[in-house]
Length: 338
Ligand code: NAD
Ligand code: WQD
Image (cartoon, rainbow, N blue to C red; front, top):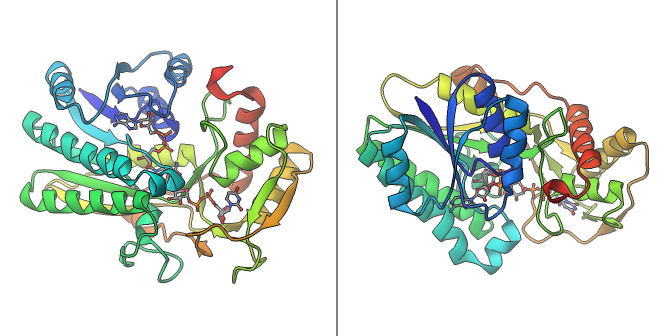
């Protein structure tokens, strides 16, 4: 019996593959390496003492998926594969709809053909658009996404919901991640963005190591405690555990579920900078810049449904997240390419 992990060479995928292998699951990875390096899976194999079966290919390639389902006794699929840059999605919307929406449709069709009925989908807090309230629970409106990336995730969720109504044997769990950060404790695997990072934590980390000069803090006039944006940062190993919990807690009869994975606590940009300076023992250069278009003031989760349905709770603190990010950054200043 094996678990198919699409996008398993990527940031969250590689940490989840490691957690699966470490508890004894067989894992088959399919990844087209459009935003990852094979080295992440070499490191996973080194840490786990065994390697996943790895197939370099695209989830939209239905004949490839058919072969994988025929060759391996796959019981469940975790679907990470997708594009995730908000800014790129604005300039290349079709690429995002093709990959994130059509990739999901192709995968579902092949799961149905193969009789594999369990799917965990990487969704995002971005489906809530501008929050109607905080903390965000799963009953909150999911209209008004602010960019094509977010819309592609919302569309995929809607397709999965419709599909599960038509196919009641399927159990489909959309895990809505808040802001994933951090790295494995070993510092062997972590987030390796290509080019200049879009996200706050890899950006701060590259300023602290000296690869980038100065962080732009996008706005200090938000209605938050210090004027900067507030987010629910969650350690990537907590996310990995959330996927294992979702696999282990599936309803007997099929179902569609959307579940937040967050800590339930928000931190501001300035608080993140302060935590980083404390951990790294050095100043992080920053300047206040105008607000980034499309950004929201604050966003954090109500993670209680995940606890009720999956028995899962985040266990890592902000200090753990920053410690592990910095450890990964120091050990891999050039990411996996060194
Ligand atoms: P990532 O880019 O590191 O990982 C995605 C992986 O999918 C990469 O290895 C990439 O090469 C692969 N891939 C992309 N398109 C593919 C395709 N068509 N076929 C096969 N492989 C393909 O991103 P991540 O941060 O690990 O995110 C994983 C998932 O979680 C994504 O779906 C993302 O949208 C979602 N998500 C991420 C965040 C975040 O901030 N990191 C937040 C919420 C949701
Ligand atoms: C966090 C805070 C910025 C960079 C994005 C996606 C979301 C999800 C997670 C996938 C904000 C501020 C940032 C910088 C800054 N991804 N910031 N200077 O925007 O909450 O979420 O990643 O699903 O869909 O939108 O994360 O890390 O970009 O920003 O001041 O150089 O840091 O304004 O307040 P965000 P982020």
